[in-house]
Image 1 (spheres, rainbow, N blue to C red):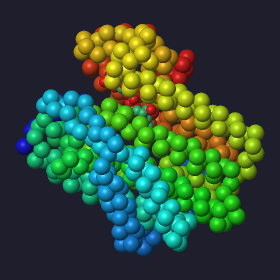
Image 2 (image 1 turned 135 degrees about the vertical axis):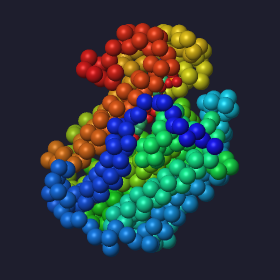
Image 3 (image 1 turned 180 degrees about the horizontal axis):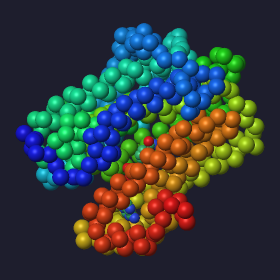
Length: 418
Ligand code: NDP
């Protein structure tokens, strides 16, 4: 049984009060964005045009559709994988195994959707269902988190996450108590991280593109760019799926409301905001400007992919010829820290690339509204906070070596600025 005393990890996110506020604020923000994106003025900071009643939000058919989507992705997860990867070593010295078939799930979903559309599935009608679908996803996230919380009560202490076990039920419900909740080999957190939400996001984008084509004869250049950029991002994440096994989400954070809501509801329904905005507020975009935006996205992607691949290659095999020549700092744990290459530029070059791409996703929406820039603003806040959390964890892991790294690479995300 899990220890009832709670762990001594310092509380994050403002403790129980902050966790409670976030559990209300995050869904409220998501519904606000969904409502204002379709409203005429599309004001990020204004009031939504109307408050939807329960009859608009609640639909048993939409709940069924959402559960079918989760069921389909779960079935694709269970298909034979091209590779089975091992995660990092756990507290009890064991390693979990994970199927690497996320990209395969994306391709199979695309084939299934293509087939369904060719026999008359009205995918262009999906944008009209976003509100009740988002409600179903939020409801699912709450219920799922509750089940995970209860499951963690009977989990062995070695299975608990470093945080999320404070003894305060609200805080622990939010942060997640168990690190890797599973039934048999089905890993709930790993499944949710990259599949239903990310693939759902590009499917919603595609539906918005199709509805725009129905409304205006053809999709706009701005809509093509947003769809293309975000498909590249999702395809890349799934192609490099194994890299998720070393991220903070998998190795450190428990599986609770924060990740369940984030993965299942927040990502598909708010990350598709630019495409939602464009459907209701078409923006003219000429080829020269489109080329500049493509260049910005390419630069962002180059930094993002270069930095992530360099670290992953180095962590897998420091003598790999692609990274063997890089300068490193030894640490007391036996692991080394890169101090040249991308990781010598700033301490989180991958975040820098991600933020440049976020800018490129908003620019096709023009500069008349703040709303499409919500992702960039939110993501900056998220990555600044995430960076601080990661630094704290690295300081605990590496102590003086981390101080030395910070001395040699003084900037966190943006060279000479931050
Ligand atoms: P990172 O990939 O940034 O990994 C951080 C870890 O890297 C540290 O804990 C440390 O772990 C290792 N590390 C740090 N510095 C060095 C160094 N100099 N040399 C070698 N190893 C180092 O973690 P994230 O999970 O935050 O991000 C992964 C990707 O996901 C990023 O590209 C991020 O932008 C993206 N992301 C996207 C989100 C979205 O919603 N779109 C949300 C969150 C992240 P150790 O030493 O133990 O290996």
